[in-house]
Length: 113
Length: 111
Image 1 (cartoon, each protein chain N blue to C red):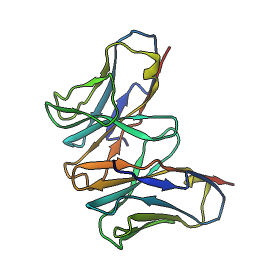
Image 2 (image 1 turned 90 degrees about the vertical axis):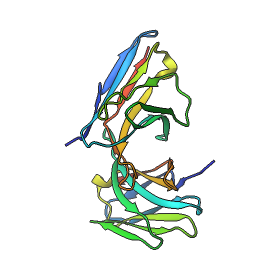
Image 3 (image 1 turned 45 degrees about the vertical axis):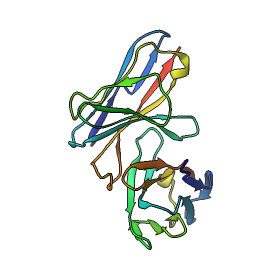
Image 4 (image 1 turned 180 degrees about the vertical axis):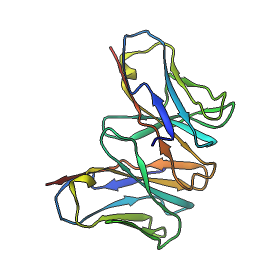
């Protein structure tokens, strides 16, 4: 039973379209994260948030943007999708101290054609 | 730059074999280490939380040890089964700020 939900699971979209990847969690976690997964399975942090109205860029530069208006919701938006954005995007959340680790969503596999 | 390295990158074992792999991390400013199992088409799931030098954790046939002084953790699987096939990720917490994932070990258990 998932406590963190990502939609859509798969998305194929044309170049230039605006897209929003949704992520919601029901655990009341303060911290939320977006990771991009490359073909070698490495996870790269692209955005994170420590609470409402707090968003930061991660280690990997990304053209996407995020917002955190509600604790449970952390959507990621691409204003103009390009083929280079084709990737798997994973959302995660954690308690403030992160001691119990992260809870991950099931991911969104994005293909931009 | 913090490096968290896992080895081997991938391995294939026969059903019933025992196996182990390594997560290496910087030995300074250790806060915690996590192990995750990531099955294909699913999301990573936390396996173990390791916080103290000498920690040993066990869940069924899977166990993990931690050596913070030398900067490594081992994950052991006893009597591997096909359902153990997954990518095993470690994640290192430096202080309470940095959280770095390793590159993962892909395990395939052959029936």
